[in-house]
Length: 72
Image (cartoon, rainbow, N blue to C red; front, side, top):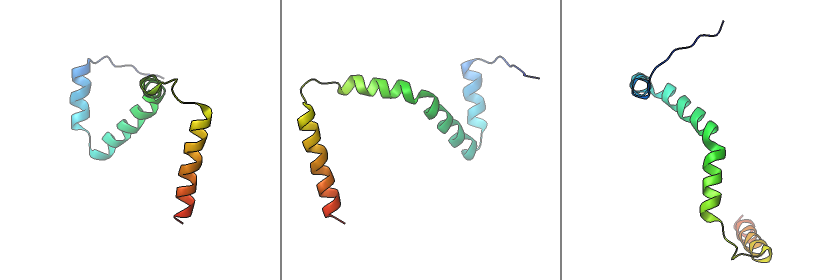
């Protein structure tokens, strides 16, 4: 049987303050998962540019790979 409880945002914050560190970490992980698509879209909109060509991106990726592999 599902239950429901109505609380306001300040009550929610107060409850979270009372949680232990492990519970808070679990809440953080849950919120990160839940908000990832929104945060990723915002990030993409901030870095959106038409100044890079696919050739420039490929060259940069190859340079990073070469640097990474030569260091091993």
